[in-house]
Length: 257
Image (cartoon, rainbow, N blue to C red):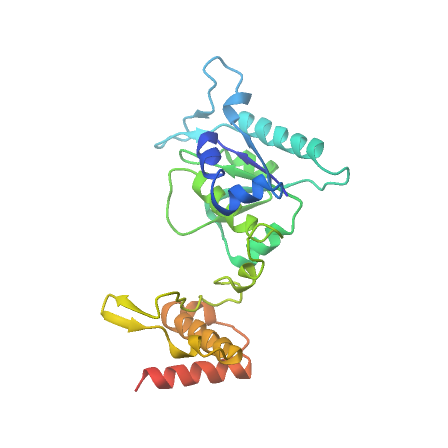
C-alpha cells in the first residue's frame, strides 16, 4: 500500500515509522511510506508556508500554494511508484472538524491502493486546499493537538496492522478490540496465581480448562460486559444475536448479586 504524508515535520514520522507494526510493514514492503514537506515547494527565500489569516485573529494559517504543490508531488510519486492501473490515492486531512476515526473506517482505508495524509499545523490550512483536493477529513478525538502528525501516525498504524502479513499472528487482527463493535475481553498470562492491586489473584479457571468453547463464550461475555459498563454508546443500534443477549443478561445478573 502506498502512503504519502504531507507534513512540516517529516522527522517525527521517520522516527515513529522505524518501530512497531508500522516499521515491520514498511520493512516487509507492505507499506511504501513517502514524506512531502511543503517547505520544499515554497517559492520565496525564507521558504514561507504560513501567513496571517484574513479577517484578523490569532495564529497563522498554512498557505494554499505550497500545500497544493506538495499534494501534487505526492500524487505524481504515487503514479510513478506503483502499478500502471493504480487509482489516485485518497487525500485525507487530519482535523478536529473531521468525522471520527473508527475501526470500520480503518478497514475501508486499508482496502484502498493508496492514501495521502495531510498533517496541518498552526490554526489550520487555507480552506481552498480542502475545497480543491481533499477528499475527506478525519479526527482521532474531540481534543486539540499541535498538529496532524500524531493523528497521521495513528491512521498509519491502524491501517498497517490490517494488511496481510503485517502481524506475526494473522489471528490477532481478527480478534482486535472494536473489530466487532465491542471492547476487548481481559487477557492473562503466567503466573497462574500472582500479585494484583488487591493482593494475590488467580487466572479465571475457565481459561485453564482446555475447553475451547467455554473459553470462547467467557471471552465473548466479558467483551459484552465491559462494553456495557464502559462504553454503552457502542451498543446503541446494535443487532443482537440470541447468544450475545443471553451472555450479557447472565453477566449482568451475576454482577448484581
